[in-house]
Amino acid sequence: MRVLTGIQPSGDLHIGNYFGSIKQMLEAQKRSETFIFVANYHAMSSGNGGEKLAKLTIQTATDFLALGINPQKSTFWIQSDVKEVLELYWVLSSFTPMGLLERAHSYKDKTAKGINANHSLFSYPVLMAADILLFSPDIVPVGKDQIQHVEIARDIAIRFNNEYGDILKIPEFKIQEDLATVPGTDGQKMSKSYGNTVDIFSDEKKQLKIIKKIVTQNVSLEEPKEFLNCNVYNMAKLFLEKSELVALQNRYKAGGEGHGHFKLYLAEVIWDYFKEFRLKREYYMANQGEVREILLQGARKASTLSGEMIEKIRTATGIRY
Ligand code: ADP
Ligand code: TRP
Image 1 (cartoon, helix red, strand yellow):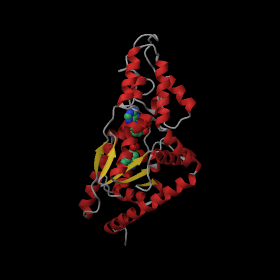
Image 2 (image 1 turned 180 degrees about the vertical axis):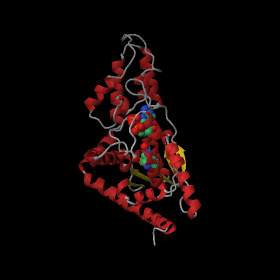
Image 3 (image 1 turned 60 degrees about the vertical axis):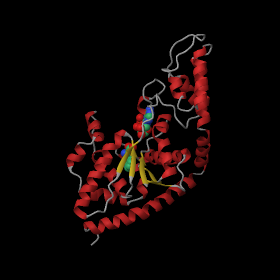
């Protein structure tokens, strides 16, 4: 079973990203042949570019290696290091009706918000189709917002195959089981755009400061406290074993401790949870040459497949003359 996914290089990762998607992605590595790439061309469509994009790309690759992408098991590369993707993007454009792209939520939502769309935002789903179809995956695991993009890829592949025969594999999407939405420090969904994140790789002081800002009820120290709707408890829940969770519930029920105590406990729990990842990240930060080597090896492996596929496509479409 081949599984493929792309990661947007969009900056500091938070615990919502980790429990909402990264953890499942890394689980797939144990069971399947996984292809994972950093989608740096895609990032350009949201206006990232220049030195910032270069930094984000390598930071994202470093962070994901630290979090557990295993280069022995997964093929891991930077999108732009496998050039065939842009060639396939062009070929697929000829099989993409305008209406299909005009209906894409990613484009419609942004234009509805008054964002001036450029062509890359509009044609983003075609590039994503090329990312997928170049490697013939069986499954593309996606969040709900990306389902339509995989459907577009399927649609384009079917149109292409109708013209040139069974060359492209029609991919299936798999919706990532939504673990409960991870709440941010203000109780809303944790998101970079709300400024309420607890980041995975932060320094300890900064992280504690952020955790201390978690919004809680105003109750006196002595009183028993409600845990079910408490933002601190709901965050802690992600990290704790059953027995630890019950112990925490008992502390809430007993009274005599304030939310400040629970926050200190939460800070400790989070800090410990990501300890191994942090050490690995420090290693990779100090050995960026190794990160680049892993990415190049990944690109080489990916290029073997993409080279075979693009040859078939060049022949079928008459580009090979
Ligand atoms: P952000 O909202 O911070 O910009 P992204 O949109 O880049 O985050 O999310 C990347 C992935 O992380 C998505 O697959 C999304 O489902 C998951 N994710 C983000 N925030 C949360 C959250 N608060 N709870 C659960 N999953 C989340
Ligand atoms: N568009 C995806 C996102 O925003 C990232 C992505 C790019 C992707 N190409 C892909 C995901 C191919 C799966 C398959 O999250």
